[in-house]
Image (tube, rainbow, N blue to C red; front, top):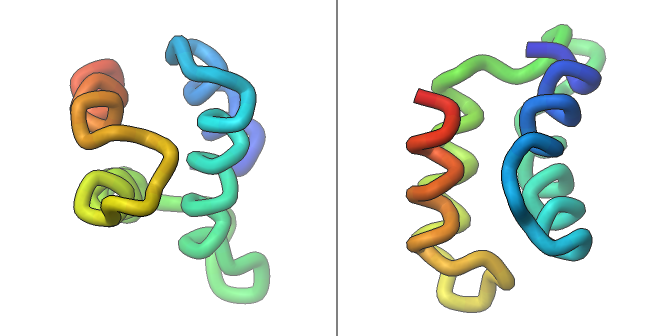
Length: 72
C-alpha cells in the first residue's frame, strides 16, 4: 500500500495523535522510496509485531492486536 493509503487506513483506527504518529514512524522504516512504492501487508504486520514486543513503545500490545484485527 502506498503512504497515502496507509495514512487513510491508520486514520480509521482510534488512537491518540501521538500514538498515530508513532505508528507512522515505525512503518516508515519499511517504506524505502528507492526500493519500493509502499509497504506490503506482511511488512505492516511485522511492524505491528515489533511494536507489541517492545516494552518502551507508547502503544500497548493490546492496541497493536486491535489494529491487526481492524486490518485483517
